[in-house]
Length: 114
Image 1 (cartoon, rainbow, N blue to C red):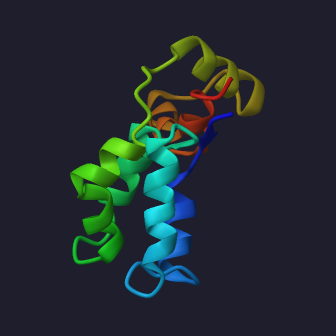
Image 2 (cartoon, rainbow, N blue to C red; image 1 turned 90 degrees about the horizontal axis):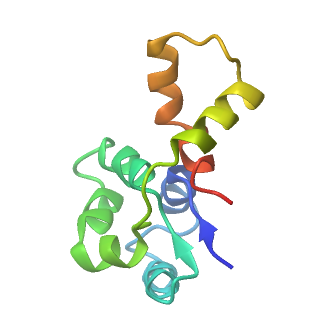
């Protein structure tokens, strides 16, 4: 089974109980699970982390090639699934601006689920 992580999982872990410089074992475990194909992160979620504070340890961690390569979900955008999520979970009459916001949020991760 493949588990997809949202950006908030990484952000919350880094900012609370699993700070990168205090619990490096957790972050190594994430990388290992990613290499084993058990945990992945959609590109949109990685980009969300990278849009945060540039001096943050999480920013450095996610930009590290070995971490990014291990965790990046190598799957394309499923537009039909995204549209189903929008229509059934949000509304079928959203503006282009609202759709753009959704594409970067939770539904952006949902469209990768099966």
